[in-house]
Each structure stands twice: as structure tokens, then as C-alpha cells.
Image 1: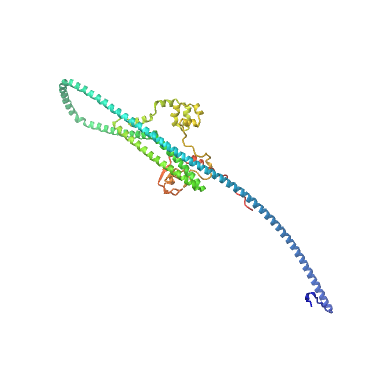
Image 2: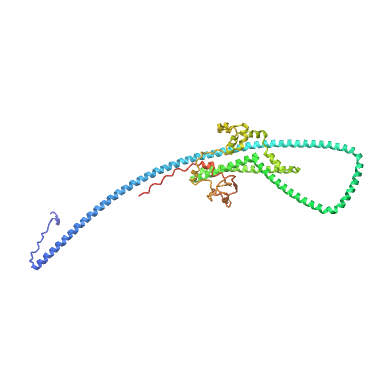
Length: 492
């Protein structure tokens, strides 16, 4: 026997009983049916309206969804475009940074080479100057010995002449002995008469004599004071001119100025390297700065020694002045002014006015003897090249920079110049020892105990002879900053 579920079978629905209704019940039933039908119609209308509203809302939702999809697509496309633009700009910036870094490395190499060449040239110049000064000192000693020999011979000749005069005087006195008795008696009588006359007038004229002597003493005192002041002025003027004319002092001062400029340039380059965070280059620059500091200390010692030597020579000349020569310092001053040979002075006077004007305008008056000795005319000067000038021993005021010059504005645009790192107003004018940095002005460096750049202890301060930092060739030679690109547009 098979099992069949009940769902396959349908029960017979009983028909409702056919009840007989009264008219009143029938009317109520109809009214109920009508009300029921009206309610069903109302519900159907509400369902239709609800379906219409739902369809409208579904259409709006579909439109909003479509708009959202389109906006999302546009947003994705804008993001992709902005990302591509940013990638291109970053690639350009990285490429520019790479090129700049390459230029900086090349420039650092050139700076190191330039510093090495400067140090080598200064050492060679110092050695040549030392040999030249030794030769000049030897010649000066020989000249002094010859002068002393000449003085001794002159004294011997004067002594010889003095003996001759004494013998002549002795013979004359012997010849005049016969007249001595008559002269002595005459003098005795004359002295007695004069003594009596002076005794008579002494009482009346003693007050006048004292007054005259007093006024003469005052006038003599004033004259001595004036002469002493004039002599001091003449001595100071001679000392200043001697320092200006001394070749060794000029050479040392020029080398000190060169080292100060090089230290200034190295400090500026080191500031740039710190911004780039290149430690190896900073260490290399520190070594160069230490070498330059050693040379600077040596040159300053030589400068002080030379000044002391000139002071000693001045003291010797002061000792020689005790012979009472009139206008001694004025004569020495004029002698120092006229030290050039007369032939060279004549050649300078015969030099063309146009050549002299060119040298004056270029600040090269020291080369007047060179141009005069070679008889250079204005036509020859216009045709001369740099090599020709070097062959004539004509050099530039400063050594050539180790990198090409660019505009100063490129440095100022990056905020790197020769201004004081503390006040950011005045120019840097002080070298700190023993680090060698040039980064502060005179006013700001006074209270400092440590260098603002390296935090090293300040042992000594050296004031720069000239404010060369703002126009330093190394400052202008630094590479410029790459072109700035505009930032990408903000995402919407």
C-alpha cells in the first residue's frame, strides 16, 4: 500500500446555508456590502496611488544612482589625471634636484681645487717673498756696513783735518806770545773799568734783566712745546708712510685679505652644504678651513713681527736723531717719499696720459712702474691680451674664482648671503677662531662665547679688514635653485 499525502486530496466545501433574511436585514446587508465595496475601492485606489509613488521614487532612485555612477567615474578620471600630473611634476623636480646635486658636486670639486691652488700659490709666494726679503735684508746690511765704513773714514778724515788745524793754531800762538803781555795789561785795565761800570749799573738794571729773562724763558718753553708737537706729528706721519711703503707689510696684508675672503666663501658654501645635508663635503670644507686658518695665523705672526721690526728700526732712527739735526723726521719722510730712482720717475712722467687714466680708473696705480719700464702706449695696451699682461707681471687684484659667476639674486632668493646669522641685517665682518667661520657682525659677536654655526668655543675674534662678503666671488658662484613648479590642483 502506498502512502499519499493529504495535500493531494481536497475536502468538499460545504455550501453556506440558504438562510432567509428579513427585509430589514437585507437592507443592512446591502448597505454593508456597499460600504464594504466602497472601502475596497478606496483601498484599491490607495494601492494604485502607492504603486505610482513607489514607481516614481524608484525612477528617482535610478536617476540618482545613475548620476552617482557618472560622478564617481568623473572623480576617478580626475584623480587619475591629477595623479599623472603629480607624477610628471615629481619626476621633473627629482630630475632638477639630481642635476643640481650633480652641479653642486662638481662645484665642490672646483672649490676644493681652487682652495688647494690658492694654498699652494700662497705658500710659493710666501717662500719667494721670504727669499726676496732675505736678499733685501742682506743688501740692506751690506749697505749699512758700507755706510758705517764711510762714516768711520769720514771721522778719520775729520780727525786728520783737526790735527792739522791744531798744529796751525799752535804755531800761530807761539808767534803771538810776544804780544800777550801787552794784551794782558790792556785787558786788565779794561776789565777794571768795565767791572766798575757794571757795578754801578747793576742796582738800577737788575729788575729789568730778571723781567727780560723771565719772558725769554716763557717764549723758549712755548717754542720747545711747539717743536715737540711738530716732531711727534712728523714721526707719526713717517711711521704711517713707512708701513704703506714697506713691501713685506703690503704682501702680508694682501695675503691676509685673500685668506679672509676664502674663509668667507668656505663659510657660505658650508651653509649651503648643511642645507643639502652633505656631511662628506662639510668635512672636506672643514679641512680646507683648518689649512687656511694655519696660514692666517702664520701671516698674522709675520705681520706682527714685521711691525715690531719696523718699530725697532724707528727706535734706531730716533737714537740717531740725538745729533740735533733740524727737521729730522720731516727729512726722513721726504727721503722715503723720494725713494724711487730718478730714471724710473722720469719714465713715469713720460708715460701717456691715456694709459695713466686707464690704470687710475682700474685701481692699478701700482703697475705704473711696470708700464713705464716697458714703454707701453695706449695702442699697445688695447691690443694686449690677458696672457700678454701676465708676461708683463700684471695680475688681477684677486685670484680667479673656482666656479663661474652667476647673478647675486639667485643666492638672495634662497636666503643665503653674507648677512649676520643673528641679526639678519648687517654684513658678517668677524672671523671666529679656532673654527674659522665668518657668520656674525661686530655688534652681535661681542657677547658670544660659542660659534652659532658649529657651537665651537670662540678662542679669538679677528675683524675683517674689508666687508667683502656680500660681493664675494664664491658667493656669486653657488648654483641657483631649480625652477619652482606650481602645486597640483586640489581634488574635487
